[in-house]
Length: 327
Ligand SMILES: NC(=O)c1ccc[n+]([C@@H]2O[C@H](COP(=O)([O-])OP(=O)(O)OC[C@H]3O[C@@H](n4cnc5c(N)ncnc54)[C@H](OP(=O)(O)O)[C@@H]3O)[C@@H](O)[C@H]2O)c1
Image (cartoon, rainbow, N blue to C red; front, side, top):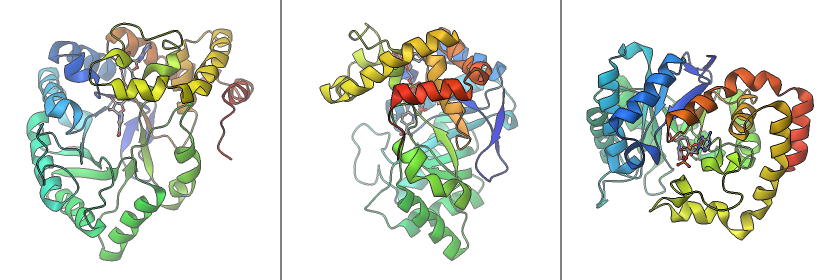
């Protein structure tokens, strides 16, 4: 395993990590989740990603049970939660958002579900236009000072919003955000490569990137329909199917078709090619893998050792096939 610094912080995060969105509770229960987490941990993965909203809190319950059964020393792994969307199925006012009330209560709930005393990483899952940035920054700072959270960050915030949080922290002598969790993959590049470009050096922003396979689309398995049991076939995820398989996403289907021979020439699976490509970007601190079964995790984790095969020449071929480099 390779370990990268989370931005300019002192925290070392494995270049590949494992997340639970969609999979935990829908496709994996405690036993199978533990099997995947154990495999990942044995391969050197030290970061497991979660959020209050995943399966309305059930994903954190499963991860908490798995962590307990695994019995790993607490100082050998990093676990996260995210606040914003809420976990209560009713979502009453104050059960969502980034107000002091919800951020604190969601933290306490996540600690309970995950059965840990502190969260290593705590993300604001989306920006909240209804809460002043000072309120959220002060709250994150105080959770860190209380020892309930070690590092805080954002997810899918604009560069401007991240800078606003950073400047607010600096203005009041508070702890600024350490990391952002954005989507980044071969088909979604603009924000990571262009909008955030000045933040990596400028404020030492770390990144924990999500959906390296665009929910599986980059494996090529959706080119001729939706396989039964796959993510885009799941009840409740019709919106995701619509997003990926809509006519206006046709150009992405063509990109995937053009990538297939490049993967074959390199002797890689499409999943490995796509994940290895994200690892080549030095601004990526960790790539959060998703896997609904152990075989996928085993295949995907090989991406790290084969990433050296993506030479400048192969990267150029990929760039040609993608034809979507941000200007
Ligand atoms: N902050 C945020 O807003 C946000 C948003 C999304 C995700 N995340 C985090 O990022 C993590 C990863 O995102 P993701 O799950 O969307 O990652 P992803 O790698 O884009 O998609 C993972 C899914 O693709 C399919 N897959 C994976 N490997 C495969 C393989 N080798 N062959 C065929 N199919 C394969 C599996 O779904 P099926 O087998 O079901 O088809 C798997 O669950 C999440 O778990 C979560 O922790 C964060």
